[in-house]
Length: 386
Image 1 (cartoon, one colour):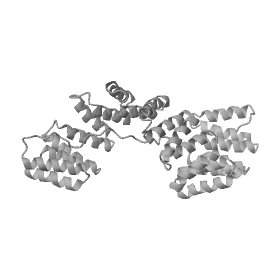
Image 2 (cartoon, one colour):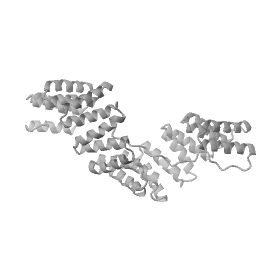
Image 3 (cartoon, one colour):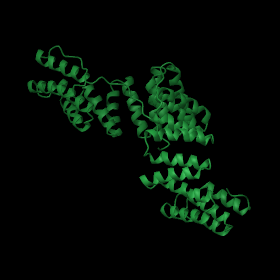
Image 4 (cartoon, helix red, strand yellow):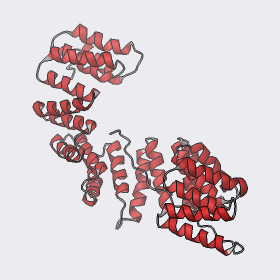
């Protein structure tokens, strides 16, 4: 699992196709339209499509039918098909807001955020105080990593509606994405204060993740534990607790939660490696090796392979560790970590020159690493290395 296992919160809803009915419509078209949107609400999508298509048989390019068909396809995640219906509607009815909304949401779902922004901003020209659209545009700007524009729009929403949930959530994600964890914590905590009695589990895990990033692990444990009480199998809560206990150097507690994840997902290579690390750090090399090898059986994993090398080092089998670490460096020469451990093996074998050469070979790659520099300084001063 990457460090950014942040769940997305839902955007504010746009009611699909609920257009004000034109009283001048023929009764038959009005009835089919009403029936189609009701069926769509009930998720009876094929029946809804049938109703909308009956309208098109009566009136080509009817806006209610085209938007309804677009909404039907969008609900089935058939975004390109939905786009075709919305664009057809807009070609005959350029100001149809429901087609615009649907079209923009399709582009967002396809990760085509620039297109979505262009459509939503077209709408905002006529109505720049629509909170639903403002939060959508802010979210899209966040996705393309335009911090300034995204924050400006979220704050505009908060000026219009203090403590708007979608703006607070968006600001939390925005600051988290840009590694401004204290600011993210501020906005998610405001969100929590609004809903202490009916808190969303994702708010708890988001706050927990901020504390994890800030290394205030004991505070993170509190929020992840609350989340786990709500859902004992929640991956993010289990991962957060395991990682917080790892950060607090309570490896025996960390192992408990890694294993709880593995009960649910036994072939999770990353978690197998994390559990292996925890067992290795408690000195249980035998169990650690079993976990690393399970991970390697699934697929090669750099960190599982590194863990196996470190077990060799920990057991005093320095030459085997050297061989393993050298192979890792050949496969991934830009990762500084194997160089550190390889140099330490040479130090433990009283081969100081090889240790220095190892570290300098990394420096020659032109990559800056403070850990490499610090180790070279310690060697030159004849200090303990690791």
